[in-house]
Image (cartoon, rainbow, N blue to C red; front, top):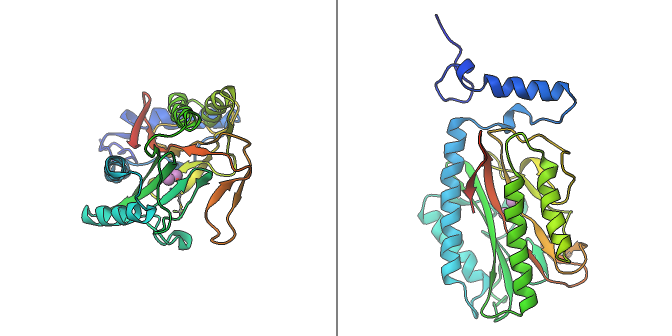
Length: 286
Ligand code: MF3
Ligand code: CO
Ligand code: CO
């Protein structure tokens, strides 16, 4: 007797592997639920590849965390990202992405995201800076960012960074198999607003792994039990951008990249790439 092997590459029979999940997805879809397209569910080989890219991506941010300090230019950070990535067999995904000129994004204070590293941007005591780095290994992607406090920052800046860290944590806790995408945004936005902050909606998380930016869009505001059902095998980022003031942002017209808060208030961000598993999540890059 020949058994049909599972599409995921586990080597197991389909009926002993993904058939139950696939049936469940079809049933939910027939009930009117939004479900992921089949290509959003990664194979075993893809997951292993994304895990490897995520490990290098995480290692880069760990190194930056050790070296970042007042007096350093964001260009130095960028040079490190490029050199370390290449030395470890990776490619910086940001470099040349839609013409982006550098290997990572460095966003200082009221810069929300997509800040361009520069020789003339010198980190000073009290700044907060997000370093967002995406790494390609063997064609797979890991995407993560952290906001660093430079030297000693005012309490209000430290509080914003800690609340933003907590927003990501709450988003991760809401991300579970068979939960909804809206649960993530609901958890994040409820907490941010309770603490008197606002959530950026023009940019969000995204499917990630086989491409840099895949579907679905992961909105950081939302309503519980709405949006796409989260199915084991999905890989995506959660990356809340939290503003101290109003949520409005604008893009710097001089470079068409750097995003600032409209009201000049501080903004912070943390990003992980995750995998939805049968029992919870696996963090692939942090
Ligand atoms: N890493 C960012 C994200 O989290 C995207 C940066 S795109 C770039 O999605 F071109 F600005 F690098
Ligand atoms: Co991202
Ligand atoms: Co990123």
